[in-house]
Image 1: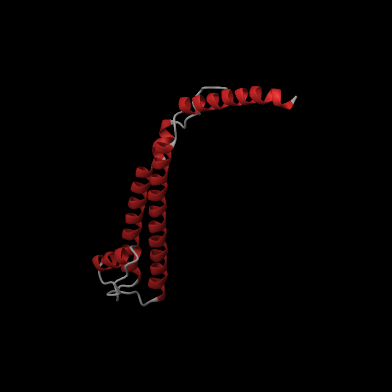
Image 2: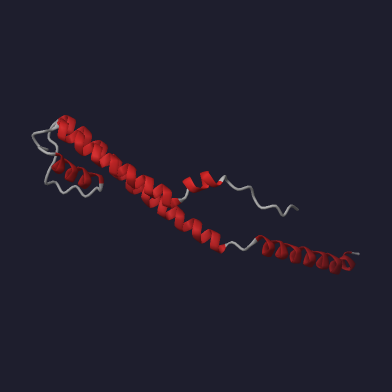
Length: 142
């Protein structure tokens, strides 16, 4: 039985995959999407979104799935952009929830697992007990 530890991921990849980095990138990406959608909405629907600040307010409300309804797109192009914003918001919340949940599960799993030496000691004790049991019932089988 080998006592070598399991092969580890390269540190660079492991760092990229940590929950903190995933959440940070997710937040930055979503912020970029909000700004992009706000600017796009200002360009596409000048009547309902006369300046970028109103469009950004709308984008934040839409992506966060709050949707106050104080400013809404009327034109088809604006509604298409709104659909993208809604899908981005739902995706953001879903991924954020999944990342936090998996992080919590991973930390609890790591805490709950006994170390390798403890497991090997338990297995050796079980093996020894099995040998003793087999030896004790051997005379009964004759």
